[in-house]
Amino acid sequence: MKAWIGRLAIVSLGICNPASGSEFLADLRAVEAGKPVTQAMRIRWENQPQLAELVAESTRQRLQTLTVDRLQALLTAYPYSATIANLRGQYWARLGRQKRWAEVLRVASPTDDIELQCYQLEAAARTGNWRAELSQDAIQIWTHGLSRPKACDGLFQWIDQQGLITPAVRLRRIDRALAANQLNLAQWLAKPLAGQADGHITAWRVARQTPGNFLATRAVAFPEWVDMAAYRLAGEDPDTALALLPTLDASIQLSAASAIARRLAIARNPKASALLKQDLPEHPVLDPWRVRFFLSQQEWPAVLDAIGRLPPSVQQEPEWAYWSARALAMTGSADLAMEQFKRLAEDVSWYGFLAADYLQLPYSIKPPAQRVSAARLQVVREMPGIQLALALHAEGLTVRARRQWDYAIGLLSESDQQAAAELAGEANWPSRAAITAHQSGLFDHYHLRYPLAHEALITQYSDRHQLAPSWVLGLTRSESLFMRDIRSPVGAIGLMQIMPATGRTLSKTLKIRWQGNLTLIDPTINVRFGTYYLKQQLERFGHPALATAAYNAGPNRVSSWLPEAPMALDLWVATIPYSETRNYVQRVLTAQVLYEWRYTNRLLRIENLVDPFIPAQDPST
Image (cartoon, rainbow, N blue to C red):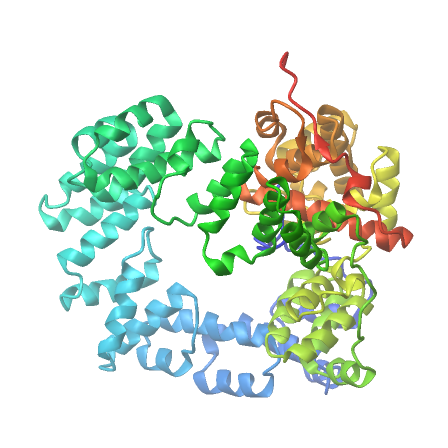
């Protein structure tokens, strides 16, 4: 099971639930089949934003006949349409493939798309519009650790002919390819260097395959691979890594020590303690893991020291402010701890709830301080881009609707985005209501950020398996934000993000006909599978936090994370090795508090919803 929120790294499966008998849907399907936008269609949708979608789809079907002037006219006539805007990129790519360079420059606009950037840069080169500053842009694209799109081949050939790909630039890309574990790419890139990079590549291979040998014999000559080798050796054989460290040359010793300390800290190996107390170079992974390690050992003075090594701005973040307060309380500075806890307890967040629990203060969950005005709602309601998104959503065209909504929102001010979030809530569109409310600063609009989507269905199967509906809602929100037609990068599908292999197994167990991955798009089947699987994890581990972690990371990993002795919930969660799972557990349990409040209007503490201690591992297992 894989999670959402904070990254939304998901893609749609393209499933729609069209409204039966819809005139617009019939017209759109006709246009998708190749029919032009007829006069009757134009009359039907005159002065309505849906016309833009029909025109855009018809134009896409006839992209080969599109001209730059016609595209510009469409962009001017329908500036609110995501599909029209997407035509620019499609047409731009077509022009690039056809090497129509002057036209490429006419349609080009700022973009993050590497393929389009390459066509734009090549167009500048081929038309005599190259400027010195473009060289850096082209080299930046070229010196990537992964293979680049075929569309970039012409640009790369040109910059190579101009002498811009110097041996130093080529070596830079070889390094990046090796860092990305792209050995074949690195070897291909090295061919023009006539053996100059062979030793470099061989050293990288040795560092990966026999890290101890590398550290002892090659590390001084190739310091760029010291961190990788030391980290790998510490994972394979911590004792050998620690014994080898004092024998290393002084020029690489700190780098190796940092990598070994990082690996041992994440593994919660007690032998990390001495290294972590040394004055090691700052490192974005090591520095927070120094704190987490000493938390796992409950060495509170060392926790304070580790937090003190973080940059001042980082120390003020809720996570580290909370652990600073906990450490102060455990080391006899109760007065300072209380002040920090009080400030944190004002936040509606995981650490805000933990701080309130520590002081036995009420949670600061309150109804919205201020609602969006009716006048602002009406202004946004009449915006064509928002109207089009809501119309597509009503038709069940989920992919088009989300794309249009996100495009339209990007054109709005923050206050208009807030009104749009309310409109999405009114339209029963939980994903867009929650995302838009969050990004526009409506943090206390819990009715939008924590929608009661699929409430009856989730309650039905939660009750069947004796699970708290608030817990399942919080987990579903974190998994998919209630989008039934999405798939994660690893292939998990639907509301509760079920992996297809798990779905096939559960279909046999629960005697449900398996009809391929699309089975998991059905909300009823998905929730039935998800709640059944969650119940299995709860029965296995006996604690909701462990079951939540197992739902995200898998039960085998969670079994390896169990403490040797009972451990406070906050400490165990803080020391989960995977940041994704750590954040996921915090997010789900925080959402459970808010959903309990929304369900029952009662503020139940985390300690009332789950046991405040994680049980010790069973030594017999």
